[in-house]
Length: 150
Image 1: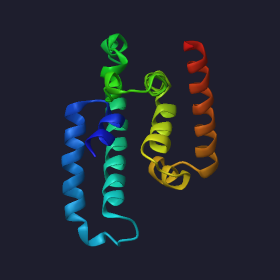
Image 2: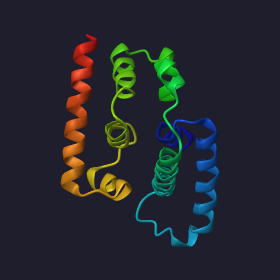
Image 3: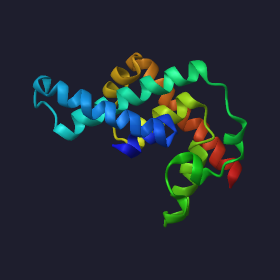
């Protein structure tokens, strides 16, 4: 759950806060858990929703930090690329960090976190058509970045 939060908020302290708030929220709303999905999936959705909410709030008030541009992909993505045995995986993850924020977020939710289109629509509060279009455009943008890097 921490990795899920970290990939969205991009800050260790914020991710820890999101985790704590999410567990508190889950505990206080445990009676609303219907059992339609697994407990882990229900908790993951709470973490994702809280992470996106915190990220959007921080983007309103924080200017882009120039030091982020100097960090290596290992520091930005939250995934230790030195541990990746597959070079293609490393390339994809590092290029994903170069995508515009909405594309990175939607690809992360779909391909890394495994949410389907309907779940992404609910999480990001967008229409189904917009979700499909954004994923398609994000994949195309990622393809172009990977082609340039090759």
